[in-house]
Image (cartoon, rainbow, N blue to C red):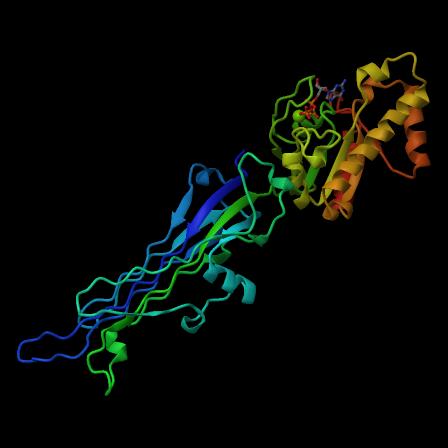
Length: 398
Ligand SMILES: Nc1nc2c(ncn2[C@@H]2O[C@H](COP(=O)(O)OP(=O)(O)OP(=O)(O)O)[C@@H](O)[C@H]2O)c(=O)[nH]1
Ligand SMILES: [Mg+2]
C-alpha cells in the first residue's frame, strides 16, 4: 500500500522583465519597450473522489511547474507558466518538511488560501550596462529544512507540521504559488530616465518538500492482536477476502470491506495486528495505527489462544483474566498513540467463542461485568453472535 509519498514541489518562478528599446525605421532614438515577464505556474492539490490511493504518485519524486517567460521586445508580456494540479484521494494529509522563504512568508503570515500580492514578495531590480546584456545571476531562494525525513525512518516518530488535509472532492488548495513576472524597462521610463537600462527580476516561486499521507476512510476499524480473527471477521461481514491463517501477522496491509447495514454502506477496515509497543514503533501495527484516526467506531477483537484455553493448570478465572488484560493492553497502545483516539467510541468483541467452554464464557462475562465493560462474544468462524455485532454497529453508528 502506498500511503506515504515524499515530493519536492516547485512552483514556477516569475519571468524577468526585459530591457529593450524601440528600433523602428525612422525612429532614430526609440524609447524603452521591454515587456513584463510572465508569472510562474502554481502547484495545486485537488481532492478527487475517484482516487482511492496515492499509487499514481509512486515513483514520482518532484513536480515543477513552468516558470514564466521573460518579457519580450515591443512591450510583449512573457507567457505565464502552466499550473500543475495533483489529484489525491479524499483524506490525504500534507506534511511540510522544508520550504523556501516565500513559502514561509505566506504560510506564517497568512494561510494556503491566501494569494500573495506583488508587493508582498521580493521583487528586485537589475541593471544592465547596455541593451542585450545577459541578466546577472540572482541569489536562489533556498529551501530551509523544517524537519528531517527519511523514507526508511518511521514517519510516526517524527515531529510533524501538518499543512492541510484534503476533505472534499473538488477541493483545491494552492500548495505552491508561482512567482510574479518582473516588469520590463518600459515601466521605468520617466522624464529623468528616458533610456532606463533597468528592469525587474521575476520573483521566486514557492518551493516545498512535502509528504502526502493517505488515511483510510473507514467507518469501523477492527483492532486487535495478531491472530485474533480480524481478517476472518471482515470476510464474514463483507465481500473482502483477505488472507486468513493461523499465524500472527498474516495481514500486512489494511483491508477495506463494505458492509450493507440497514440500507446503507458501512466501510470496515481490517488493520494489521498490533503488538505491545506498537505505538512506539514495534511490529507492523504502528505503521497503520494512524488509519484508525478516521474511523468513527473501533471494534476491539479479543481472543484467547489455544495454549491458554486448553491449559489445565490455569483456572477458568485466570483464563478469563487474560482476555481482560488483552483489552487493557490494546487500549494502552491506542492511548499511547494519540489523544484523539481516547475519545473514539468503541465496542469490545470477543472472538472464537466456539473454542470456549460454557464455564469459561460465564467467567468472561462476569469479569467484564465487574469492570462495567460491555462485551459481545461471537465466533467469526461459525458466525454465531454476528447478529449481535451488527445490532451494536447500527446502534452506535446511528
Ligand atoms: N476456532 C476459531 N478460529 C478462528 C475464528 N476466527 C478466526 N479463527 C482462526 O484464527 C486464525 C487467525 O485468523 P485471522 O483472521 O487470520 O486473524 P487476524 O486477526 O487477521 O490476524 P493478523 O492478520 O495476523 O493480525 C485463523 O486460523 C482463523 O481460521 C473463530 O471464530 N473460531
Ligand atoms: Mg489478518
